Image (tube, rainbow, N blue to C red):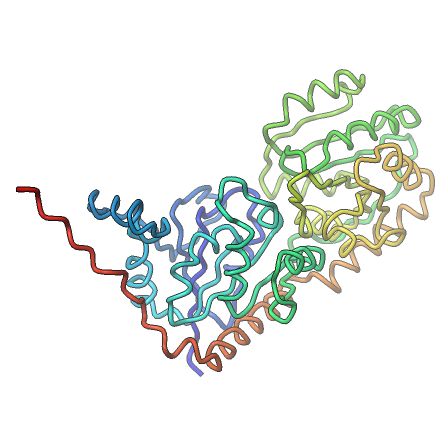
Length: 408
């Protein structure tokens, strides 16, 4: 069998928090991939040689207005992306398209309904929230689920959420984040005898990550362990608020906001730390985590975790074996879990070792890539057996637009 080609579509390639996508596209073995994107970001952090940058289409203003306001066609049609995508995919010989993020799949839905090759769409967390800026997002999601042969979710909890949103269970597949274990080797740690515990959290500074809960819990923990220190690695819109909160809690001298760090710097932080914190919480729009990359990386190095029973976190952190899990927003319970780890040197060592073993057994990158490519093969086979695909034109043309004649 000749090598298959998958087009990996990501609207922006890549935002800093999308490392898991980079790991996937650079680790494929039985599929060759190229990137389709509208914007390149952080190329020095995420270098990739084969990128198709989708240009802004040039359209006739009259035709644009006619399709948008008279025929009420979707944006992908009246903006001119329609034929451009078809030509690009045909030129590259794509057998399959993998669309990253559900809202991007919704945008591309009019194209997917007509393309004669299969598509898969992967959901990562924020895309299961209700999108107020996308009209009829819920019904469009249901149409997307019906159009594609398979839908990927990063965790079981996300799959459950997608099923609740109308995705048929027989189309759902778990596509987990993989960790390159060699990059995050186990570090043997001992509990500090002088109480100088080093705690850390690595994430974007947004409400879902629960950093305010971390600060409140650390303020309690620090009363018993006054030599403890906390590092927050990451940036985001809440930074000023979180810095003010640390001042109010009287812990600003013990908390360091590190900002975004390189992978090498992050690895150093993992190695220097004793505990990893990640008390994620669900905002009102139901945005949730899959399985955070930083939790898996930290666990791989042997860091025990104190986190919440949120999203896919319990699928990675076995409560009482790899760390401790508490209810969302319960900073007092989180502080108690942190103290429990700090009070027992043997528990601290055992949970860290089990955390590393669990990631190796369940999230090793090459195994997850093999599973992903198996899902790709299944999607191709399902499309081949689906009678809708042979009868689809490569792109069913839109109605011919005739420019109105000027009035006499």
